[in-house]
Length: 132
Image (tube, rainbow, N blue to C red; front, side, top):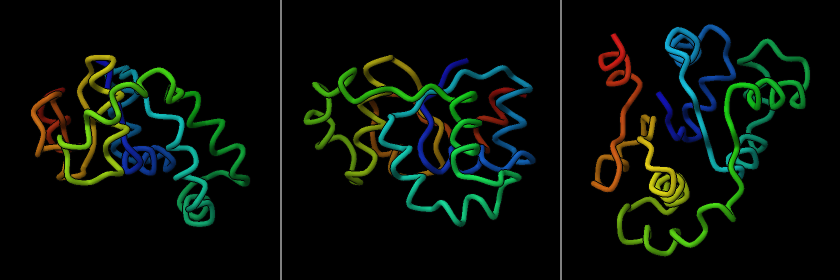
C-alpha cells in the first residue's frame, strides 16, 4: 500500500523502534510526503536527534529519504488553492493536495484530515487495524 504521510508520521519514522517503522517494514508500505516537510523537520533538529540513533541531522534525513519519497511542490501546485476550503488547518493543505494528485490515502494522527472527504485518511491506530 502507498500513503501520503504528514510530519507527525515522519517524526515517528525517525525513531527506529517506532510503530510507524514496524508498519512500514512489516507491510512494505510505500510512503510519500511533500518536500517542504523536510524544512518542517529541520526546525526540530535537536529534538529529533535526541529521539533517534543518528549522530547528525544529515544522516537522519538520509535515512528518511530511504523510507519516504519527497515530492516537489511543482507536482501538485495547481491543487493547493482548491484545498483551502477543504480543511481547516492551512498547514495540512499541502498534504491533502499531494494525496489528491496521486489519489492516495493520508496517514496522519492529525484530526483535521477527518474533516475532508476528498481522500481517505488513517491514524496509526486505524492503519494497524486495517493491515492486521
